[in-house]
Length: 86
Image 1: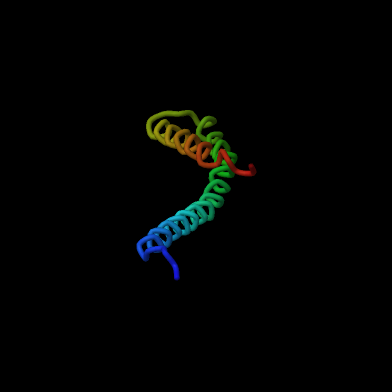
Image 2: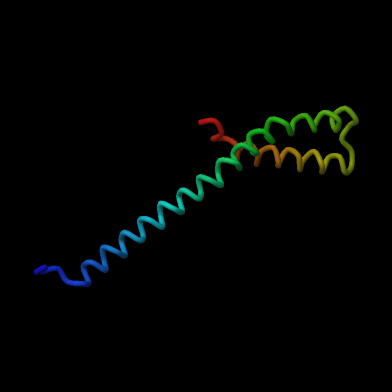
């Protein structure tokens, strides 16, 4: 006969379930993060080429806004793509 109570096995099952859910969540995050890092890295590489036409034609009015948005987007891409290839 076993001396363990059913509540102990329920607690163990609950802890095991939490661990499995946590691991599957971490795996899901890794699956989503890898393509985002890839896209972020290559966007950070490619976006500066879009600055050239703006800089050559001069920044006035709306071009200044577009240039600022491109800079912000490039900074975001640098942050997102930072861990790519590691």
